[in-house]
Image 1 (cartoon, helix red, strand yellow):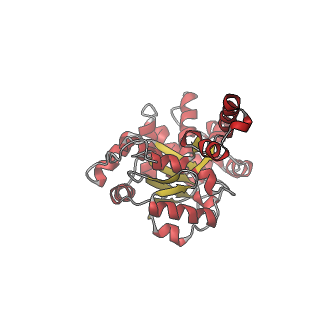
Image 2: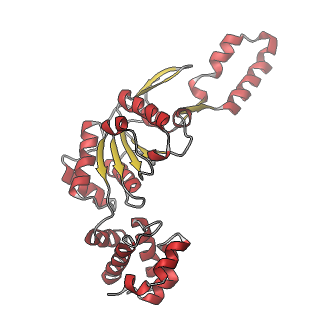
Image 3: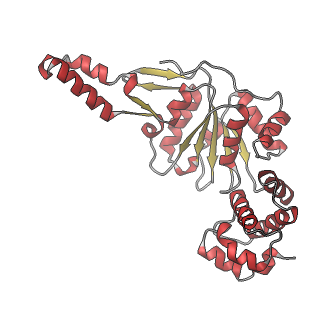
Length: 302
């Protein structure tokens, strides 16, 4: 069972700086270390493991890499209880039933060769590829395994095998082997420790929240029409919130949402009253909003 396309290589720039520039053109500002790790992962055909707090841009990086390299992004969202079948493939049961009924109508139930019918029903045309199989069939591609820390150790073992062999076996059809391994990006919010064996297979990077200067750059890159003063004030306020011991500190996505909300209101500067009425764009827990409102001036002024 061959891949859908030939093994054309990813459109990888000549060096990490070139990849950083390509990512920048998509709106993602990667520092030198992150761009280097991503470039090496693509060059060495190794998975990349991105760990960090929620909202630091791990998923966005995978999306930006796919765009920058001109490859489709295939996403596998992990969750508690996910198993290999949900990542690999399923059978199109309704089409199989319709096909069986068509055979019975054409030949009569008594005239069917049971073994031949079973073989026919489990044909590739009735296969429903899930993300991992899709990535193996699609070359080149970027496979995002998002929030792998939400899955269990058994699922990690399955991933480790696939990442080592770049192949899976479907009993009814045979082995599916990738003509060009996908660039695999695994993300983890570190709600639990991912097994060392899986990490050792990957190049690793801890993704921090951006510093103040980079956050301003991100806001201005994504929203060129945003006044510089407002971008700076949002970045400062968000940075202070991240050190306030909140249940869910705001990430870059919340910074962008808040800046967009303020811009839609026609604000050119951030003040206490405006911050009060727009906190829902940046804080998503009642307890966090209550804590920040109690001393809002400390976050948005001075």
